[in-house]
Amino acid sequence: MNRIDTLPPEIELAQLLQRCAARDSTAFKALYDKTSPILFARLLRMLRRRSVAEEALQDVYVRIWERAVQFEAHRGRALAWMVTIARYCAIDLMRRERMTLVGDDALDEIADESAGDSTEKPNNFDFCIGQLNDNTRKCLTLAFVEGRSHDEIARLTTNPLGSVKSWIRRGLLSLKECLSSERQPT
Amino acid sequence: MKTSNRELLDRLAAEYVLGTLRFRARRRFEHWLLSPQVGALVKAWEERLAGLEPRLEPIAPPAAVWRGIETRLKLRKLGRGPATRYLAIAASLLFVAMLGVFAVRNWDGTTVTPPPVQLAATQKAFIEENPETIYWRVELLGDNRELKVHVQKAHDLPPGKAFELWALTASGTPVSLGLLPTTGEHQRALTDAQRAALSGARQLAVSLEPAGGSPTGLPTGPVLHVAPLSPA
Image 1 (cartoon, each protein chain N blue to C red):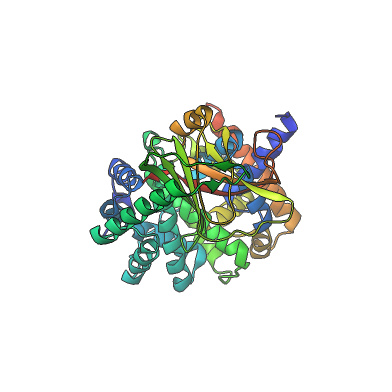
Image 2: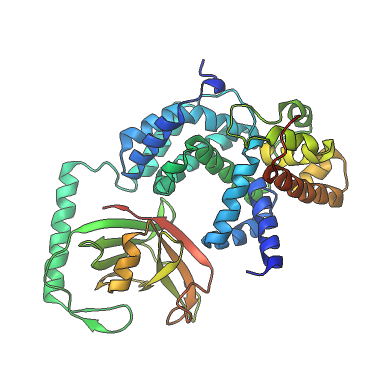
């Protein structure tokens, strides 16, 4: 089984993307084969409905093909670049359709899922996210991982909308400040 | 940029990346992404928040998804066989021959006689809503010496407005390539400044401007489309 901790090597993905930029459709298929299970899982996490996620996956790969020339190979991070395209695609769809996708049971899963250790995190990310209070961390995670709107987060966490908005705003600021400082986990 | 503006933009960039902007706000913010400063803010937030990416077990999508992608990209005439390619070459030779016979009206209203030499297309871009809805096909000919624009599908144009085409240079500064036509196929020579801008450009953009074009030399209206330049 292709587990996420055996991700395709970044350098290989970057090379495939460069070949896509030169309109090499064989490279595009190879890229699709290596990455589509990862992106499909990510889309399903946000969109929930298989049929919607399958449609979105097509949009994502059309965008990847179209935007391959914009990928900056020297910066690496090929998978992160593709995952971002997938996330934005799902968010666009959810905001446009104002989709209400799941029941409230997702909240428990989210709590222990949090951030994976296979992604390219800033060095002191775990320390900085750990500095936030539980409410703030939960709000940020629901927004980023699930693509939830402010209103949905307020409903799911049974908190006032104003509190949710201000936790998110303050949480983002604290995260930025912490990540830019030299503090490391002790 | 004023500090307060920078702070506001940084906050919007953060919520754009997080995904909490509402649809209209998200769309509006995307118009600003062409600005190198805003692009840098977004990129920084993408890197900061990457740590929130969840660890998920991969799930293989059904084969129909790939077939759908193939079909959509074939609409763009990808992977053309040799026969169609020769037909395309023959069609463009015919077009060049016709240009030799007729003077064409440029889209800024002046009448120009097309150049006698045939230049090969070196780069192209599709200005589109999605792969099924392509508005303009733009080709750069003979090492960016000339620009050829084909209107594939008429784009809605509010009265008193015009579409302006921009080269997005490596530094992020847009350089105008002139107004876009609303019908037909047009070709014209590029200036040295436009050629220089295109030599480092990887994308074209289209903005909505007052009739006659941007009064400032930079986009003033919303950026409607951004398209990658790819080898022809």
